[in-house]
Image 1: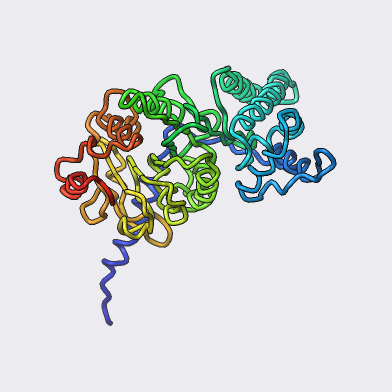
Image 2: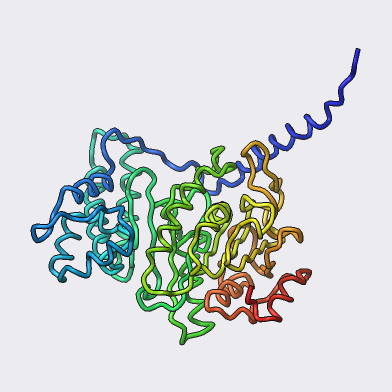
Length: 402
């Protein structure tokens, strides 16, 4: 009988098993609640109402029109007409790329108030189980927190586990905008945390904004905590695939293209968020000057050059980050490819000293946060490279122009 060497096949299966096991570790918050809806979601219903609506005798434009076209439409309205649209179609306006950002803030505030009332009623609905009433209470309290007078909510969708984005600073006047793209298990309820606050988008973005302001008080900056995509459930196999990243990449591209003015944009992509940024890279507009990834399982590319972006690509990983144990490979759609901090990838590798593991890159006082802030204000010569990254140091010596 002819014998066959089964070692290669066994190695592949071991790698696949390792991927399945390690990506389970991406769960840091437990299962994300999933809700099925037989009827239209609140956002869909608001958009449908908009499509049937009119103002001053004229039909409203397609809500999916190009942001520039929608922006032009809103300039034809007076303040009272714009306010009327926000009150009639709060979710549609609040999530409309091209609508004035201050109008989106106002519209989302109205939508949040409505959803708070809905959840308050569900808290006392005897048709719900005690667990259902408890979940309603958690949502109601989250909406109350988001309604604080100083908060600027740029996007809000209460459907399912929810999507949301918040702005720190003045987006209309910013010369440079930073966007924080988080990873798995991010939704309405995990958007901010009291315990380990800098591991959640609100804490990350707020910390980055303060660090940028401290680094250059005269620079007009804004930071967006962007949880406006459906992230993978921590224990789901979708965290090992690009499915959620591909959907999120479309939404991120739409956000960046709709930002007001001509500000340069830097993306800060944490964990699975770096997969999304890798998928999105080639389609992003040239205003995206920098893509910085931290704790990355891969960017769905073998090399930084394969991202086909004009943006500078930066990477960092703390020495104690467990993500380093993820097999950096892609087999049959599982896994996310090469390690962005590896020598062969070609990213500029930054120091992450003090980052304290996978969730600590935005902790105040860390070298990782300082580096992010310097990139955010365009002070490239001030960043600190990883000790063994000559490409990063060489790039800085010539002005980090590429």
